[in-house]
Image (tube, rainbow, N blue to C red; front, side, top):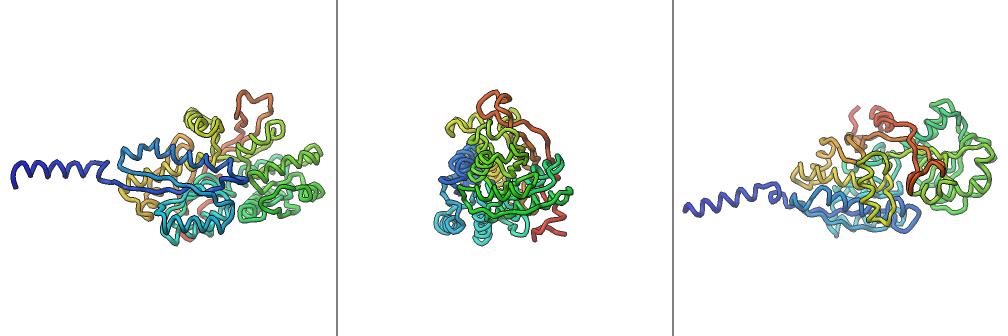
Length: 401
């Protein structure tokens, strides 16, 4: 070997060992959500924007990681979502699926992801079963769940005197899980559940169900629904004078997009639980300002913030593992602490539950709001270990007892 050849070989080896070229990993991420129905505002295109922002902020291309993002509308139907997930995994080379609101769709996609040995980072669905009896080694549940919502809103309202409840429950996996988890909190805190009615999903006319709840004389009517269903329930409750008559509405899952749609005049005084609010600190404000410019002026929901945060942590794990192998990356995601401007520091537990603080907010009166989207005042912080189901109570088979 000549000296010139030796120099060339050495230089090539050094170049190939650089952190950028040594990886050369191509990732295809699918954002699967509601892009046309009652959850489109809180997820939809905004979640795609959030995922792209995470890739940009991570500077993936500079680190030798090529990321392509695709999206599709699951129409809130498990069969549609399942078909898309299988096609993405089997034919289109998708490595991970993000977001997936609508718990019935999420549970189906989670199982398919396990079967295909891919990665599912869920930000949009609420059912705590995703990290409970239906947990898998391939799914991470990022933003919130029905257990945390029950601990936050349910716990606060019982302690404030709302000790008798009647539920309006969306008749699918999410609504059932939320009613179950909220009922447990009500009873644990000395209250009682007087009854519940299952409502069609999605629904538009909640009149007869609200009249049943009104007739129950329960102090609190728990809305175990979300998005457009919650908006319609609250509006129609106002038309029947339910709150004016002395009963309280508990919006067990209320997003900032719902408050925006309702307006402060209607939504004022609502107590709600969220894990992200755009106006919490300098980091959330800076992100939300950039997001709003790309999203028609709309601030991010906690679901969209969770897509950003989950995507960012996934990319950190890929970089650290120098691989996109699903088992390797998920293990690295659980090993590495989480840290970003939106949720702060946290961890991913063995059951796939992302741990971070959760906040109890009250919707401001119109007179208290100083600017567009200035909707919340914080009334309590639920530390992560208090907000989410303890591992000691977990039904997840991944958890060692």
